[in-house]
Every structure is written in C-alpha cells, then in structure tokens.
Length: 148
Length: 191
Image 1 (cartoon, each protein chain N blue to C red):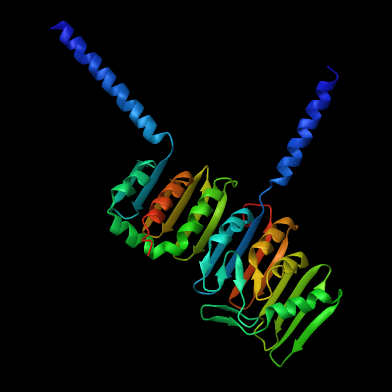
Image 2 (tube, rainbow over the protein chains, first blue to last red):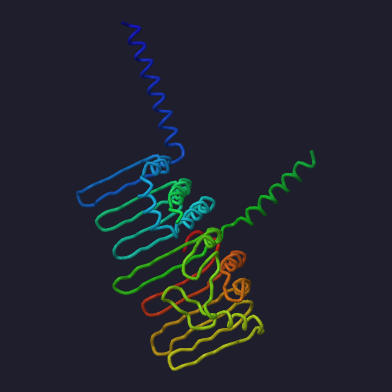
C-alpha cells in the first residue's frame, strides 16, 4: 500500500515537472497579453497566451479561410512582416500616439513587443505581442495566398 | 602589459564609433487639430524601418521604392499634383544658391529656392487665412530623388539620403485649425 502511494506521488511529481517544463517551453519565447477592462461594471478580460501557439494555430485554420483573410490584406503583408522584423532591432519607443477628447490610442515598441493601448471613457484595452512572432504569422498568411 | 591600456582604449574607441554609426534616426510627424474636436496625432518611424519597408510597398504608382511619374506629374489615387515635379527639381539642381521661383497671386505667394544646400519652398496665404506651408529638404535628398530613371522619383534613395543627413525640420504647415510638423532626429519620442 505504501509503495503504491509512493509510486503515485512520484508520478504526480514527474507529471507536475513535465507540465512545468511544457509551460516554460511554451511561455519562454514570449507571450501575448490581452486585457480589456470596462470602467462601468461590465466585462473584464485578461488573456496571457503563449505567442508560439499563434503560428501553429494558423495551421489549423482551413486554407480557404486563411486565403480569404490573406487576400484582403495581401498588399500589406510583406510590409508588415518586414516592419516587424526591422522594429525588433530598433530601440524602444512610441510609434503612434493619438490623443483627443474621445480618448487615447498608442502603439509602442517596448522590450521586443508591440504594445497597443486604447483608453476610452468607458473602457481600456491593452494588447502586447512579441514582434518575433509577427513574421511567422505573416508568412503563414502569405503561404496561404492562392497563386492565381 | 603596457599594451593592455592601449588595446582597451582602442576597443572603447571602436565601440564608440560603432554605436555612433548605428544610432537610429527617426522620422517624426505631428499633427495638431485645434477647436472643439481637438486631437493630436504623433507618428515616429525609424528611418531604418522605412528604408526596408519601402521596397515592399506596392500601390498605385509606387513600386520597389520608386514613384512612377505620369507625364512628370505625381498621381496617387485621386490625388494629383499638377506640376512637373521632376522638371522643377532638375531645374533647381542646375541653378546656384539663389531664389529661384516666386509666384505671387491675390491669394498666396509661392516661393521655391535653393538655399545653403536645402530646397526651400514656402506658401504664404494672404487672404487672412493665416495658412503657411514651409518645406525645407536637404538638397542631397532631392538629388537622391532624381537618381532614378527620367520618369520616376527614387523614394528609397531619398530615405537613405535623409538618414545620412543631420537633424532638422522638413515640413511645417500652419493654419487656423491645424498644425503639421515633419522632422528628423535621433530621438525616439516626438517631444
């Protein structure tokens, strides 16, 4: 009986260690952070997702759907990919800042991430995404383009 | 052992030179709308990024970092600049450091000149609208624009020339409701 508990404990430790390593492997390359907060009582959303899953996730999207999305933004894809790759080598700093009576929108390069913040009277949105994963995502979209 | 400080000094010097050469230069645009719906837009673009992205942009008459002219004119979508830009720039290239073109009308005075290595253009409205446009572009950038074929402007070469030039304001536009400022420097923030 004792040895069975010991074996179960050992399996639990190994399982937790494997889970820890998996989480580390998934999150170490970088994570996408999404936060939406409504100022009046309402929906609050917080997501912290491994960025490495995004290019992999795109592989699960049906080709036709991906090609449709790519077609709409085809002209911009190469430019976005190159901009993201080049921005990685640039120092941190604000790229776009719009301030007005309705609120504030900022796009900033911060620590290898592209950070978008929107502040409005009724809600605030924060999105950060590692720049190094923009390239692989765009490449997936580019690859999905119909050749005709 | 006496060589160690010398080597260290050389390494430090090399590092300083390298860091100076890799200083990122930024193109800044600031648009201030005044009045009831006051709004400020600031855009800061590293010139290195613009340099890499431009060849990938393809729309209307812009391809491979070059702007194709139609009978010497710039046409982008519905926008059309009805002057032979290349002819004016070519003409400016051949003249000396003096005032070149001044067009005066009842509404405005347009002045294009080559001054101290810069292309300087000003538009002053005179009908009480207070609109003022000032353009001051290093002539090296103008030369770079003209470095391509006769029916195009080489935007990519111009950006490269701009990134090698010193800090400075390129364009200012002022009217009652809007202030626009475009400039280049080594700071990653507008102000």
